[in-house]
Image (tube, rainbow, N blue to C red):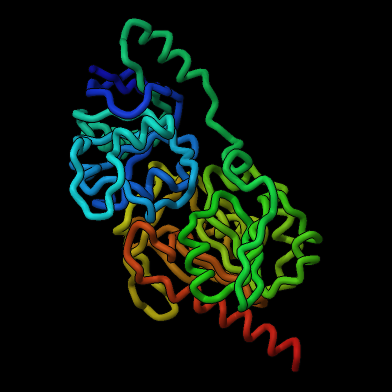
Length: 361
């Protein structure tokens, strides 16, 4: 069955339908990962987006029970060159088509993903929607142009109630802006006694939990859409060690007086080189973000630039000059992607240990 991808600039691409027919307007972006499509589909940072996979064959190892980054995906659509119908892997319990149908995610294959990716690189991310017909194309394009970009993604994907993940180590409050399960796995591996809280939890509520440290998760959208979270972090900086990832990194930066900008087409994939300016070492990282901290804006803050992207020289990490606060734009928990940067979770544990010793001295 034919299916069409229609963009707000009036262009459209023909392909074949798979997945559900739940068509939603979303921001179209591309991901350059060769594997990890299950993690991509279930990453809540893709809330409100339609994702183009640049690798040509997707679905060849199926869907398994273990590699999810959330239980309820928030992605709006999935575009591939070829969707494998008969996966072959010992862990596979489902195929891509059936999974998308079960989660209400529209898909399209047999489409020119290279042309779509090239267009996004040239003009930037734009709005798009899928359709099984072109009969109403003009009205669809008009609707695309008149529809605003979503600004409530974090509210949509964040947990509604706080919940514990007990363990015997350091007590960490994880502020959930759309947290990947990979972050929880890495903290749990280090015996952290976790309490996951909603994005709009106040500073007083967090401090009343008496944690040893605070973890700020990844999440979708523009960090400036959640000013209440920025105000909360302003009040928490200097009280406890804080580690931020992705959206959490941007929120720390905004709370300290820096600024953020929207990138032309963002960073999405598992092969992005990042340089640590303190060690001069390069890590290959997993990334998924539309926004970045403006490097020039750091000069008026107490933040130091610690990491840069070797692709476009954008900000990939910062730390505070006075307090035990640091963050990275990329994903040290990977899932999918290389594991070069998982040591950052150990650094967070060390910060909490050092902070406790300082307090007891």
